[in-house]
Image (tube, rainbow, N blue to C red; front, side, top):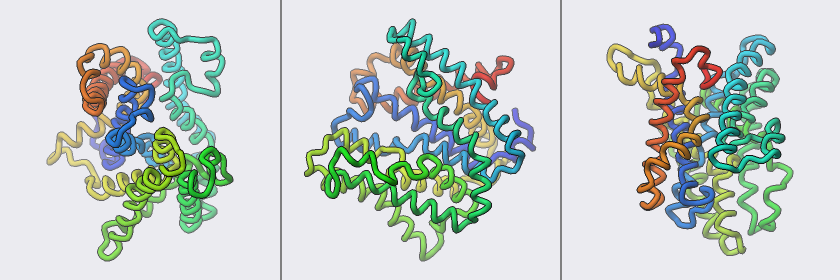
Length: 356
């Protein structure tokens, strides 16, 4: 159990966001049981489901920015500490998934092993690859933030958000095949979420202030509702496939995902308690930090648990409506992963397997 000093150093709303993001990551993967990928859910229900859960890893990047920016220790010490958190688990779980592919899934190829330095052996590990690069470059970004100040960060975020509208033009203004290669397509990329998390954590948005809240609600609704409707109702007249529609809306750097991430972040930030109160709210002070500390291990183990535990033990779920299957198997996988990570954390040097 955490000491009171350790507990008070934690930030409740970031713990809650981390747990929500972890569950959403699992839910984006559960349609794979009945479809090849979550993009192949050809229905309105499938589109709504996918759009709602696609924000997942972007919240993790925002939490990184909120917690680690500005960098307050020496560059060398910061990079060493952060890499020790992610690299050992990444290497060990890459080995685990290589063994699963070789002996259980029977789809191991030498090319899979040869590409491990540049491409994850299991799709979900992409996030950790990106996180390694972010950790290595974060001290430099921190210095840039100090140099440009709050207003400079706002300019970068505005440009990043504007660039997220470009993919939605793949029909009205540009050919459908051109939208993925444009001069602003990768502007800031995932670093946009890191900066957004930093900005919202330190400065916030006047979402709930009288007279201003409705403006932010309207802007977020525009990104979450209007732009997806535009994609399906307007772009649908230009021969764009269903998968292209879903891919555009759920792209990590889409205006929809940015708006969803912002809405979730500021809502939890506003309603979560500022500090944990073990005396009056013992359950919250126990479970949210515990779940949050396990999320990295849950993230790493989720596909192994889904494929080798949850899906084999619940074949009946695969015959239900796919939304029911996704929600139930996703929650079951989260619970099983949580229990597994708690057990793994009892091992010596467990941080090298499931994180700190």
